[in-house]
Length: 80
Image (cartoon, rainbow, N blue to C red):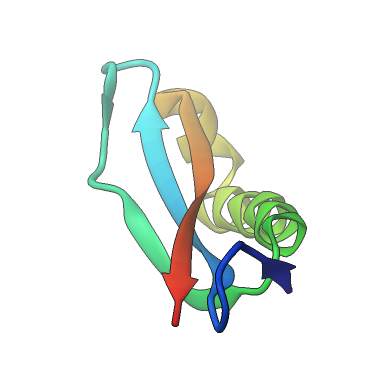
């Protein structure tokens, strides 16, 4: 776990995904993944895996036709 200054405070991360279409130039509302990650590394590597799986589920035709892209960020949160 990533420690932050201060007694009893632990930094965790929440994965937030954004699905967008470059064809229409818009995005769906961001989706927060249910899992809480103990490090930025765990969150980021999971983000790539989840985005890849989502693209596969949508299928090559839909992704190509709508020019779908998936971005993500790892939002820090403090647990006390």
